[in-house]
Image 1 (cartoon, rainbow, N blue to C red):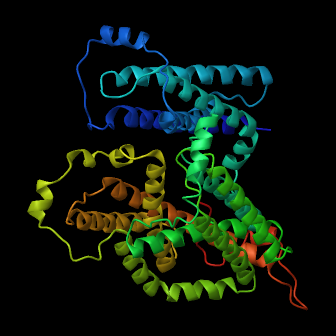
Image 2: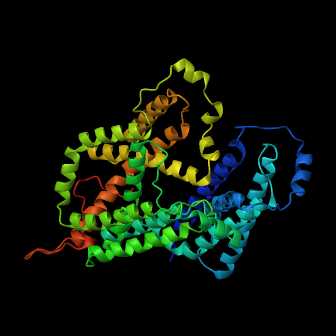
Image 3: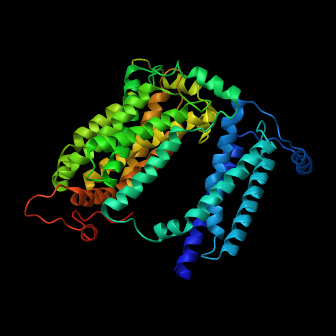
Amino acid sequence: MQIPGEAHSLRWRFVVWAWLYALAITYVSVVVSPLGFHYVALDPAEAWQKFLTIRYEHTGSDQRADWMANLIMLVPFGFLVAGSLWPARGAVRRTAAAVAALALCAAVSSAVKYAQLFFPPRTVSLNYITAQCIGAAFGIAVLGFAYDRIDLLLRRSLPPGRHGLILLLKFYVLALILFFLVPFDIALNPDDLLGRLANVPGQLWMFPGADRSAAIGAVMLAADLLEAAPLGVLLVLMRPRRTVARSAAAGIALMAGVTLASMLLMSGITSLVVFAYRSLGVVIGASGTKWLAARDPARLREGLRRAMPFAAAIYLVLLAVVNGLITHHWRSPQQAFATLEDRGLIPLFYYYIVSKAEAARGLIAHILMYAPIGVLCWMRTGSKNGAGAFFIAMVIATCVEAARWLQPDRQPDINAVLLSGLAAWLAARAAPTLWSMLEQTIAEIAPRRPGTTRVPATVMGRLKPHGDVEQF
């Protein structure tokens, strides 16, 4: 049973996040455009008449990614608005809250579309309003289905040990599968499907990053390998007594399903090379978990701490390689200033002018590039205070973008600077909790030695071996 004070506190969390997300929607829908911030004065009454005459436009399959992007954008908003209105119990009251949340989301969507008339050349049509309302309805449905579980999770810390790690890994795997299927532009008619299937044979042996330098291509292949490793970890943790081969087989089957699903995406790439690397990643994750189970976590952490200077050096080299800074081609600051793209200084501009799949990959890439700084700072200091990691990441990202700017035909990306500090701060805050869960998990699944007794997870959950593993 939910305590009234706790219900009020939880509702206000949803309210705050709903307002912040509404501001984010307004920003990306109005400020960010191909022309930058492009306001055109228009009489409000005239704009209102234009808004009342917008119609549903018949578009081709090439516009489906944009339609799906508008749908997906409103899913979190519908979720948050519903959480702001959701009662603790009562089917009738919850139904009324769902209807009110949908009406509020539709009103916000319409208001944003009306505002876009003052910022051409934005597209204002019933297509996108419909897509956003469908997305909001989906988010509301998710909230209604999972509210009690979400309420329990938000009011309590994660379960200790293996169960908490399994929960986090399930969220990760779900997010990973959705990421693989972005932008969800599914072939919906026979002509689209036949056209998509005709392109598949030419993609089967494509290497990711084949059009990039050898170093960047190698990094992209490594990313495909490592991003699937947590799936192998999850499958072992769910059934510790199952063999690595059986756990890996289950993960490879899931990767095969995702690969087949990519054949239905208009902008998808179905590559057996990528499938092979992801499958290898699953095997590495499963076998690595078994290997960790036989190790002493304290010694492992001490070894990692000693190796931190070497890890930091390798990280900086990889960061330079990924950003193309290992080169002899540079230009003077005067030349760089002469070619500066002013619109690029608008946050999220470079995410807007590329395809939705590229924008998603760019966002994740920037987060992953700078999150290791938070982990390294935690390993060095043993503290979960992320302020130092935030500052260091911002400085490094600023230097990297300045160096990229001094290369011919390159522009600085302010998004990397903005995301670097946040990614490092979150990583520094989360690292102690994740390490504590890993230690408890190892204690639970470690092979028993004769004459030893396994420590229950409930007891391990109360221990703080290093004094810095508080919940974040």
